[in-house]
Length: 153
Image (tube, rainbow, N blue to C red; front, side, top):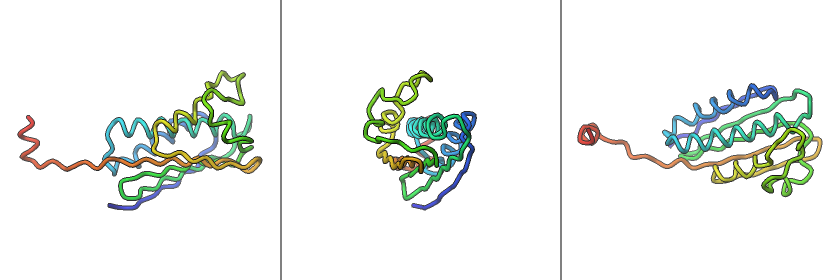
């Protein structure tokens, strides 16, 4: 069991979404997640960062902060922007709700995050910004002995 953390600050450019996703996945690797677990985390981070890029700053470039913390076998990821905020968080959590229909957005970002993570918390204040907190427990894997690995072959 160990505790570790990382802090990343990126401009709200769509090109940085893939970097954020890869950086968080690399950070999580010390927990030895399954491919499914890492895919879930990458998808949720992608949605959170994309929401900040598309909605937080309208057509301007702002900052997105990503904090990751490992606590035991759990990962906590915070994606925070300092943009316009969300007027109605509960409404925003509803599937298919979008404030930018002209961009052909599906309005499924928060639903996707919620389905792939164990916990989703959204804190937002108008004209201050939004903090999306994602949490997931990574299943502990039993280390195989050399004999067990040979027996499997």
